[in-house]
Picture (cartoon, one colour):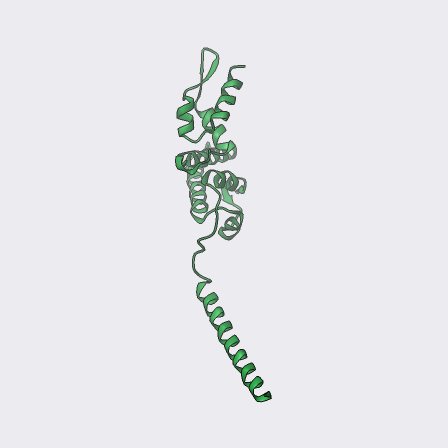
Length: 177
């Protein structure tokens, strides 16, 4: 009887070891694969959030986040690279224009990122653009005529560009005070 228990225990230990080795093999083989269950923030959120980490050092703009840090915060690698590309474009502009000051460089970068965020709006996403991008677009489409500010886009056009109709109406009400 004891011999039977010993044999059974050995089999259990061997099966357990094989099972653990198989699990370890799967884990090792999958460590470099792309995760498919990662949920990144929308592009407009990523650009506004990433812009908060742009710093000015020695007359050039830098992103104070690594790719790994930005991914942990919810910025997709594609959006991270697009932010870096925009920073490089603005840095090139700074280098080629001696009259460009630092404040205008950061404003240009912010506007560039907000333009890209607005351009990437997906009507089928079921969501509207964030507040910063919405405000940017509404201000961009505001004109002064006879000492009155008016929006140059309709509510329907604004909605098609990702602006929440409630925010559109609120902005119109603010203009008409």
